[in-house]
Length: 219
Image (cartoon, rainbow, N blue to C red; front, side, top):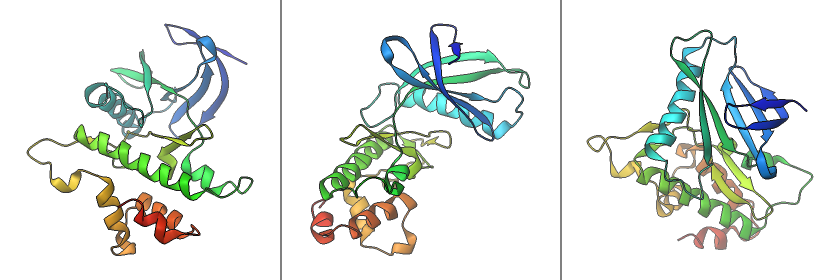
């Protein structure tokens, strides 16, 4: 295992994932805490990818700095000189949580989610979105790959704020604020107009043996 120094602490690299634009490392830091480091690839010059990482940093430090149980925690930000940019680049250190909701739903090795588990997951997604929108932030990329599940109790954590935007008071509308009642109301409307995550939640309910009871439980 490789050792990684981020300028403040040494960490042991457990896994490295290389995407089209980013390097993501799963690292073990002090006291067996596992976190995730995300940065732009050293040889990458892509303004959109750079801006997404900067935007994620800005959303956390400006709007979400207080933290919330339903939001992935950002532990530390390290600035460094990237060879393709005059300004400093961002290396974000986040808490490690997994799997994603998408991975759990597609995992054929595990039994189907119980009704109580589905209800808990959907409720906690709504709680997280309600907190995000209370900070005048629109996530703009909410999907099952950006919903993380912690432990066997499936505690929800939302990630992926690279495309998020801040709503100004002059442009904010009531429709920008998400609450659980609105989510359930959309389940009864035109299914083709559902945002992907809400449709996935609807499908989870439909696959339930007591779908009607499960949906009514949210009202």
